[in-house]
Image (cartoon, rainbow, N blue to C red; front, side):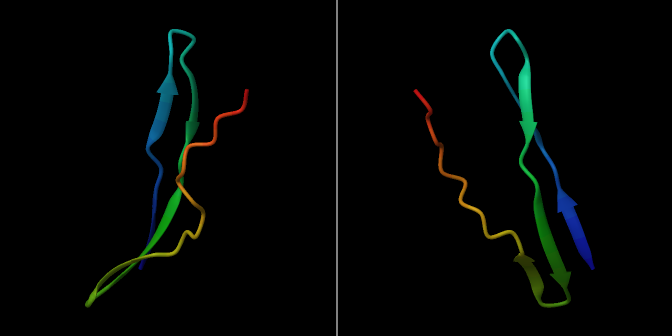
Length: 45
């Protein structure tokens, strides 16, 4: 089974936000993260 984890992230008083979406494969042996993108914070001046 594949599930999607989509926690919302809201920042500041403006409540600007985004969803960080991960797909997870769930089997009898456990779970495997299918998303391959980095979660490092990128600061744009």
